[in-house]
Image (tube, rainbow, N blue to C red):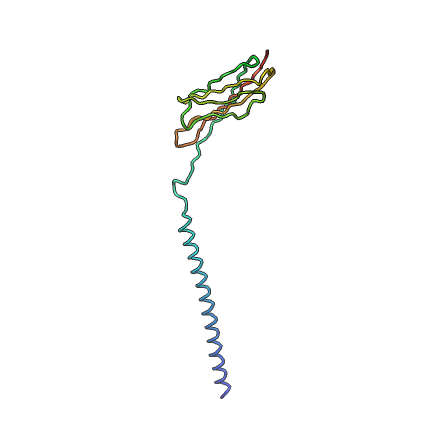
Length: 158
C-alpha cells in the first residue's frame, strides 16, 4: 500500500474511534439528563409545593402593661380573683407561679369564666406573688392578639 492509502485508512479509523467516543459521551450525558429529570419529577410528585392554604399570616399581638394588684391576706385565708369570661380559643395561664402556697390555680367554669384561687402554705406569713397571663382576641380562626399580664402581690399576716 502506498503511504497515502495508509494515511487515509489511519485517518478514517481515527474518525471512527473519535465518533464512537463522542457517541459514548453523548449517551452518558443523555443518561444523566434523563436520570436528573426523573429524580426531579419524582420529588415534585411526592413533595408538592406550597399552596395558598399553607401561607400563614401573623396578626400583630398587643402586649399590655402588667396590672399589679396588692392584696392583704390573713394566714391560711383564701383569695379569689376573677379574670372574666373567655371564648373557646381564649384562655389564661400562670406565667410566674407563687412560691409559698398550698393552692395556686386557675379554673374555668362551664360559662367560660376564668378565676384564680390562692391559699398560702399552712401558717405562712410574709409576702408572695403570682403573675397571670390572659390571652384574648381570637376569632377561632386566628391566634389571640391581645395578651394581658396581671401580677398579684400578697402580703400575708396573722
